[in-house]
Structures are given as C-alpha cells and as structure tokens.
Amino acid sequence: MGIIYSRRKTIKDVKIYASKFSSTSSTTQKNSILNINSDKISRPETPTSYQNHVITSFDSILSRDSDIDSQINYQSNSFFLPKDWDSREHHYNLHFVLKTLFAGNTTPAVAPKLQKGALVIQLGTCTGPWIMDMATHYPRCQFIGIELVRSLTQGVPLLPNVTFILGNLENGFDIADSSVSYIHLRSMGTFLTTDKWPKLLKEFRRILKPDGLIRIEEIHHSPSGTVMIESFFEALRTILIGMNIDYDIALKYGHILTSNGFELVETKKRGVHYASNGKLSEEVVSTILNSFYDLSDVLAPKMGLDVEDFRHRVEMICSQCVRIDAKMEWYSWVAKMSSL
Image (cartoon, rainbow, N blue to C red):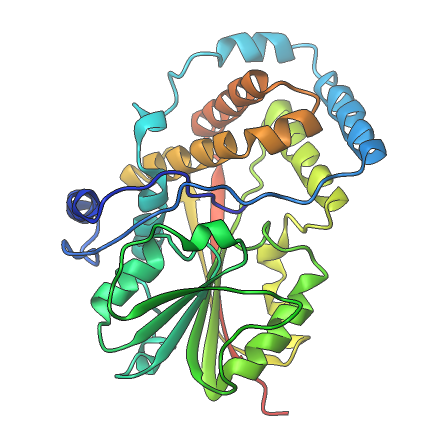
C-alpha cells in the first residue's frame, strides 16, 4: 500500500518534530530537515463491470459471519486505537519507524556509495522525509527527487544539494547515462502498474554507474484473524488486480529485479505488530489509518461504500488488528546491475 503525504510543514516545524521523535530512536538526529507535500496521486480507474463485481463480492464476503454486526458495534469506538491518531504527523512517523526498523536510512551495502560527489536519486514521494533527511546528513552528495506528477515537485524547501525534476517513464529521465551511484524507492508498489516495472528498471540500468545500487522498501500488509479483517483485504487485493496493481509486490521484488538485469546484494525483512511493539506499534497504526483515510475517495466507491462508511470500517478493522496484535512486514531489497 503506497503512502500518500498530504500536508505541508515549515522547515522550523519539521525540525521540532524530528527532534521530538528522536527520543525513540538513537539513529534519529535532531537537526533533520524534512518536508511533505499536499497533493494526492491519482490512481488508474477500475472498469465499471469489474467494480460491480468487487462490490458484489465484498457484500458476499461480509455476509459469511452472522456476528459481523455485533463486531461492528463492538469495535465502533476507538478504544483500541492510538490516542489522537488522526492528528499525528504520520508521514514523518513512518520515516522514523523505518529508520528504526532498518537501523538507519541506509544499509551496510549502500553506505559506501555515499561518498563526496555521489549522485543519489529517489523516485516518487520525493518531497517526503527520506530525501530531505538524507540530504541533511550527507551534504557532500547530490540528490535528485524524480516525481511522476508535476504538482508534487512544487512548494518544497530549498537545500543546496537537492533538486526535483518531473519524470516520464515513456520518454525516460533527464539524467545522464552511468551517472547515478544510488537509487531509492519507498512504497511505490501501488503507484505503478505491473507493466511499468520492466520499463522503469531498464531506465535505472541506463542511469546507474556500473557499480551503482538500487534499494526498494515496501510494506506487505495482509493481516488476518477475523472475518472482517480478511474480507476487507481480500476486497482490496481484488480491486488492485482490476487496476493492474500487485498488492503483494513486496514479496516479489527479488524475482522482478533478477528478471530485469539486476543481481541481489542484500535483503531484509522487519515485522511490526499492531500492539506489542510499543511506540513503533502506535506510529505504524497511525500511519495505516491515515493512509487509508487519504485513499478513501478512491477506494470507498470501489467497495460500494460512501467515504464516511469506508473510514468507519477502516477504524474498526484497525481496532481488531490491534486487539489480536496482527502483524505487518516491511521488506528491503538492495540490488546491483548484473554482470551477465
């Protein structure tokens, strides 16, 4: 599930927030400069016939359990949800959660590439926390954020070593051949249709140095344990299939990379529980809730719900996930170009 960043903050505000969160992670430095963007990325439309099929299927799934209404009433309050989750800066929280899970913004394989003059690329959500945090901590590197939507390249703070450009997969990126040391992607799985990945990786092979690296961070969020939880995510997966998007792509990046001219260098998997990981659990649940809220205009009609009903259902599902201490997993894949 891709994360959509929906509000802007001033650099001063974000410095304060980064400092506040640093108490939960020894790797977070207090002078981080971060920013987010206010616009949303549109998703491809689902054909009407397929949408009707999903709505019918979702209604059928929900009717499996005669106790579903009592579950809805039981979970309708926010007893199990983090306090004030809807007012938290979840986009920052996610960044620092991942920084904690993976022990920093980089990995042992990536760190040696961040030498003076190295060119680093981030694709997508490029006005988000990662690139600004990295640019602050690695001032001798040059960073380029490539965004696929024009509006998302506007209104970002200016740092001397950060540039934002508009990219186009059909025409390629305006970056020289063999010039990039490191490419980073985070939560891009639901932003690109499955047919776009080979084109994208081909373009990455063009711009990467022979010893350059690519890293992909992606969530696999498929909790289970109750009929409501499982039916919701089954419906979500079905909707995305109709949009030619692979909801389970986090599990498949290894195959995708090796099938498109890359060789795996490093793989990591980190799990976070909805309840038993303390502060990390709270921040991740807040992120999941807010992310679904941001997507409600897209997902609600495809599930046959109005926006408020959809958001209410998301709260109930997350409440159940907290109650049973469900788990989500984050994957990190690092690869280099194959020598073959």
